[in-house]
Length: 431
Ligand SMILES: CC(=O)N[C@H]1[C@@H](OP(=O)(O)OP(=O)(O)OC[C@H]2O[C@@H](n3ccc(=O)[nH]c3=O)[C@H](O)[C@@H]2O)O[C@H](CO)[C@@H](O)[C@@H]1O
Ligand SMILES: C=C(OP(=O)(O)O)C(=O)O
Image (cartoon, rainbow, N blue to C red):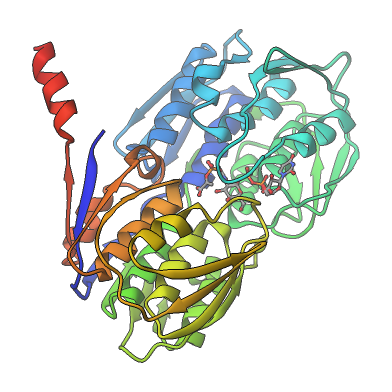
């Protein structure tokens, strides 16, 4: 496996362009299964991301014609017979479970490997199943797979989610588009990715109201068709570069960042003393040495995103004084704390809350990307640590950041991706 090395001490300066949203494009690709007529073309796709490659492979394994190239995916789902998403792909990426709703709606059957526990938390799918059952699906869980049938027809229903789960809202919304009658999802997730999916489905012929609020109504239609659609920019990638500008006390224009998707981060950065200029083209971020500590709590949207929690902790570590960070979305998303401690950070965790004693100098060392966003946070810490920080576990980072090393280098960071010796040895021994 490769590693990334970062030499700390450079203030980032310049412009960085945000790619299409990983968390939006994955359910859009799954939703394209619903089109019985015409091809679907999705633009602004972050096609080099491993997650995007995996979901495209998953569609191909179902017998669907799906082609990924440059920043576009073209999907023809007019005719396919298979309904099984196997463990080899689902285990690599949790979002594969979003094919469950579309397959049940389109084929009345789906067999999908259970995504399993993940390091950041248990991540059950009970809310997905509860919602799909309310629409008339029946499930058996056996041998690590969830198998669903629709004995008659999917019928619209009222679904109350115990948690505003993003994935459950997406699965139920997709299944309900082809159900008979109306469905209401109460306590639905309100994330921008939900609105993006609703606009995408509407462009396929679906009837949906209320996406972006906790009450979503879906009025079933008989048929959906292919469409052409452009994915929204990745708010988590944008937020990561905004925090990078702040942590290095630099000056960066994050091109394509949508301020309306990033309100909670913008408010928190301003509280800390970061200067932000929002425009239709992006967000300009600059920071000086006088930043203030702050208190942050992760929450479902529009609250502060859990996917920016680790990066925010890196920033809090760089500011003198005590900051607090509470994680309420996932029960085990503080794995990066141990890695920060290896760099000399002082963080005390009590339950869901971390007390960050900021301002202590960070020292470069070897650290691991324990999950995708923790990996980004290690790079941010490396940018301000003394000496060299070496980051391993890059398979996590490759799931979610397009050309991360190149983008940071274009801002002046001293960062490199180096192939580990054994992989060079094993490659040369093969040739
Ligand atoms: C591909 C994608 O879009 N991933 C995002 C999505 O994940 P994902 O859709 O998996 O996240 P959810 O919103 O479903 O999960 C939120 C919480 O609800 C719990 N839960 C969820 C479903 C369920 O049936 N039962 C249950 O208990 C989860 O364990 C978690 O504690 O939203 C998360 C929360 O913003 C983000 O961190 C992920 O980056
Ligand atoms: C947790 C994340 O993704 P996933 O839900 O695919 O694991 C993430 O994008 O930070």
